[in-house]
Amino acid sequence: MTLLEKIYETRDFLQDKGIAAPEFGLILGSGLGELAEEVENAIVLDYADIPNWGQSTVVGHAGKLIYGDLSGRKVLALQGRFHFYEGNPMEVVTFPVRVMKALGCHSVVVTNAAGGIGFGPGTLMLINDHINMTGANPLIGENLDEFGPRFPDMSKAYTPEYRQVAYQVADKLGITLSEGVYLGCSGPTYETPAEIRAFKTLGADAVGMSTVPEVIVAAHSGMKVLGISAITNHAAGFQEELNHEEVVEVTTRIKEDFKGLIKAILAEL
Ligand code: HPA
Image 1: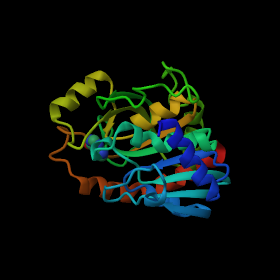
Image 2: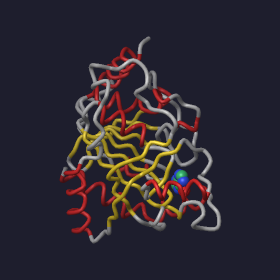
Image 3: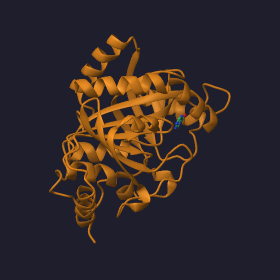
Image 4: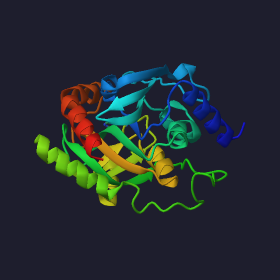
């Protein structure tokens, strides 16, 4: 089966399950998936039951697709995403975004946990641009002309108007937002201190192991994107050591703010 056939097969399957008209795709990162539990009138599907879909392997990623109402919007939420470091081909990592588009989503909200270069733990960072250091690109291969052009413009991959809305909403809620460039690596190693020094020179403000592939595919098909990083630690070299436990702990601490922010932003987008 071609990629296009797989996308349409999965779309048809999900439509048959009642996933009729999603507007916003939500991709929820490490420890941030709880937001999906607030979706009302929910249709919940296990990843394992969806054709052509990948499988989640990381602790803290549930592996459920949830459709329903959130802040008066029809959302399709991924509770747990697919990472390149799990051994997934880029096609699998980004497949949900293709299906979101095929189902009619005009926008995606992408979240992640990230190490801060300058920003400290607890910071919520609006992503205004990215640097692709994954060593791959999800659009390599035959172009899906039905979705977008061979050489997509990435100048405004992170929709500027969505960031404006995010600032206004954060202001009302009394939540401080920072803004910066997300640099995406493949993982699964955290970066070396030398890599982080290099990335700092390159203009990165946060570093992580996700998001870049999904945003490339969203931008390819003209979807609007809001990206937010939860900074969980100082990147390598700026703190003694890095571990997944700290990432989970900091995400747990800030997730209430985070959930409130995303819900309030959704209502205004
Ligand atoms: N590096 C890469 N990914 C991450 C980090 C980090 O420091 N923190 C959370 N995810």
